[in-house]
Image (cartoon, rainbow, N blue to C red; front, side, top):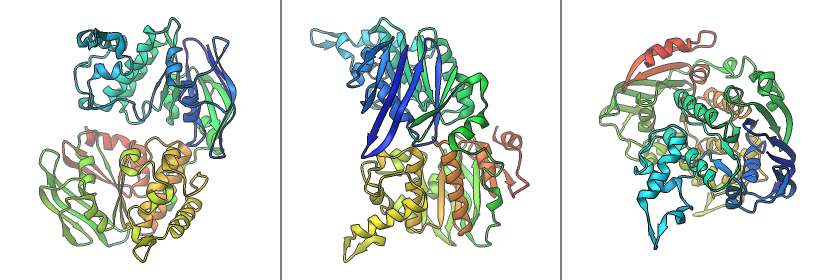
Amino acid sequence: MFSANDICKSFAGVHALKNVSLEIRPNEVVGLIGENGAGKSTLMRILAGTHQPDGGTLKLDGQPLKLRNARDGAAQGIGMVFQEQSLLLNISVAENIYLGQESQFVRFGIVDWKAMRAAAKRQLDKIGVDIDVTARTSELTFAARQMVELAKALTLEEAVSRPLVILLDEPTSVLSGSDIDVLFKRVRSLKSRASFVFVSHRLDEVLRISDRVYTMKDGQVVAEHLATDVTGPELHEIMVGRGLQSTYYKEDKQLPPKSEIVVDASRLAIAGAFHDVDLQIHAGEIVGIAGVVGSGREEVTRTIGGFMTHTGGILKINGEAVHFRTPEQAVRKSIGYVPRERRVEGLVMFLSIAENITLADLSSVMRGGAINYRRERQLAADWIKRLRIKAPGPDIACRKLSGGNQQKVVLARWMTAGSRILILDHPTRGLDVGAKEEVYELVRDLSSQGVAILLISDTLEETIGLSHRVLVMRDGAVTAHFDAAPGNKPDQVDLVRAMV
């Protein structure tokens, strides 16, 4: 139905795609996997029309197709649901669904809002979700906004007479298990009228929803499998060139923490968020907090990071009582924060790698009251080499990096700033298995250097595997503590009991 043939694409002299070919057949879900920087997102944007290839051809129903922009793609029934979402949060659901298509509802220069809302409701009915089309989009959960994105793509049915091609770029990266189940149910129900390309780093999800799977590596397609003919560990080995080892979380490098207590919270509280939280973190210790959304764990980490101000209890950093009102105050106490939304809170995307790395500690590159740009670039070049950041050089904008390399830049910033306390809020979200393993290596190195780490993770497996100790929270309170020494890790079932 839709194919890419020998597609090539370069950015700043770096090959993103080299002779990539794939086919999308009627009524199927095609999985697309690969490490960060393998070329998946670039290929998806070429299929959608937002990027143009340097070489190769696209074909739709066997006929050559040239897409100059996303509007051309939409005119052919090709829609994309972006990982970072393309919705405007300050307008209604209905307005988002028909953003750029409002002219069909204009009568004598006036928008017929009633007609637009009725049409938006029909799109949402197609995927079987009940969302108020008049609601401001910012009021929706991330999962609900993802459904609005899908409904937005389905509006293309009214513009074309052929089945749709819907490109799903990491649609599950921040969804919970139940929300993923709902999304997959919708995708399966829509296969009779559309074909999908599904990009994800979660190999189990790819195998669960896909009919066929393409694996990319270094800008090339290196394998194609029927989903029924391959396993997750096999795909992992094809992606990264090595098997998934039992030392994935580097437990052999988990050293005993030091005796020094650097974070000491006693009966810490924020009204309506959490209460009576007792937490101690020693130098060199990794403490994980497990809990469902709304348990209070996110608020605890953001309080220690200076984003929220506690209303009760005592928080001591290196033995000194503190009452943070801004993140800047926390940074002054050598606290670094790696946020879950690295593109929103973690990086200034249009600034270079060098500028982002020194952002928290400009004094390290200041000379005579001015920034020594040569020193800044050399510092960044050293981190690029040390952390194996895939980039042409320190001057490239962070928006051009893959997710895994962006995360390394965030970590490099706090290492440059000399942070002795590091808060990791879902540090591997959206990263492939190879990039995750590199982040785990970095975390272990920091721990061995005496950095105290507070961790919130996407998975219980990751929380248990990385941590020295695990706290479990439910309804704003700590409900259990578990030791997680190497060889004596708690079971996930035990944590779940305390979570729910």
